[in-house]
Image (cartoon, rainbow, N blue to C red):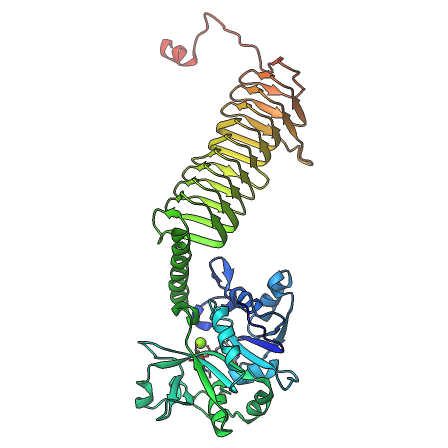
Amino acid sequence: MVSEHTNTHIIILAAGKGSRMKSTIPKVMHKLAGEPLLSHVLRASAAIPRAIKTVVVGEGKDYITSYFEKSPLAEDISFVTQAEQLGTAHAVKLATADFAEDSKVLVLYGDVPLIDPVTINKMLDLLVSCALVVLTKEVFEPFGYGRILRDFHGNIEAIVEQKDATPDQENIREINTGVMAVRGSKLDRWLSKIENNNAQGEYYLTDLVSLARQDDDEIRSVSPHSLEETEGVNNRLQLARLERHHQLKLAEKLLLAGTSLADPSRFDQRGELIAGIDTFVDVNCVFEGSVELGSGVYIGPNCCIKDTRIADRAIVLANSVIDQSSIGPGAVVGPFARLRAGTDLAENSKVGNFVETKKTTVGKSSKISHLSYVGDAQLGENVNIGAGTITCNYDGDKKHVTEVEDGVFIGSNSTLVAPLHLSKGAFVAAGSTITKTVGDDELGIGRAKQRNISGWTSPAKKVKDD
Ligand code: UD1
Ligand code: MG
């Protein structure tokens, strides 16, 4: 259930350089499951209806803002610039507005991509009865994180950063994940009191805890719903580990819903994937954008499938690359087929090995079995395109269409020069270059006549005789 949180402000911190990524692009723009880290955080915040969202950017801000200019995810986002990274409290201060008395402020990190809306909602719910909620967790290796200090009664007293921690405090295993929810009415006053007299000379947002404590305001903590959701990304090793972890979760979801994966650790989903039952996906397949697989579908190894619908019982054999296409029930594709944007295969049709198609419809039970290029073409039902046939769809200026009616047979190694129309039942002789319409049930031959010359001497034979 989605909680109703009116007057909620979400501030996403993304101004840091991320120097440990050793990259020319800002850290939050590195991709997890095919999308920038920041997109994942924006999607989680989109689950809070009507929240006012601000992203604090600094390093690489132009790169970030120009990417999100076109993204529907950032439609209701404002960006503010933190020119100098003076600390997390300084960044939050730049994003604060005139908060209403009953407003709630949630701080998220742009480099903690898998935060779960369930957790966010839980934190916002708790703000009804306290002034500050901190997302904490117990870890085996707390090094680098802010540690949670609790008093004798178990109440949170303060957060101490790694660089400011005493040896005793370093042993604490409960850490600050960074995600916080705070009552808007308190935030402004507390932020103005935060100083930078610490080991890093930064304004720490974590100082909100001791300030709330000084005001006798209650502080509550929440634990993450799942372990991966508070994992931050600081270097490429952490990013790669988080990617695998996330992919395994996606794979588990599919497996439990009735789709078989030959190896869940060799599976990549970069977007939305819906699959029916008894569908099988072999190793090393990459699914991008929005992909829908029906039931009883077979996907062979090493296939890349993007923004495509594949109907029930269709078979995609190894090493096929499919983009923005639709594959009908029982159709067979590959191995080594390339279906480019606008390919639409009807029921029981076939596109075989080393065939490339583009903006082409292939009718019911029609076949392009081997070594062809078919672009800007409309093929009817029961058409057979012989091996080595190509459509010449481009004249250097415009693209032209090839229309092939039902039951046409194209012999091997034919060149179909578009615009071209081949009528019902037409037959094209192998090796033809066809430039003119072939009528109903006509035979089209467009090739040089064979001549046999007897009594000739081959050059090789001549040399021998000399
Ligand atoms: C912070 C927390 C620490 C917590 C850890 C969890 C503070 C003082 N410390 O430490 O308690 O355990 O996260 O990962 O908050 N950022 C800005 N502007 C700045 C500084 C940072 O936008 O001036 C952004 C960064 O881009 C990043 C986030 O804030 O997204 C956290 O900053 P970072 O420097 O990584 O903080 P940590 O030292 O990891
Ligand atoms: Mg960090």
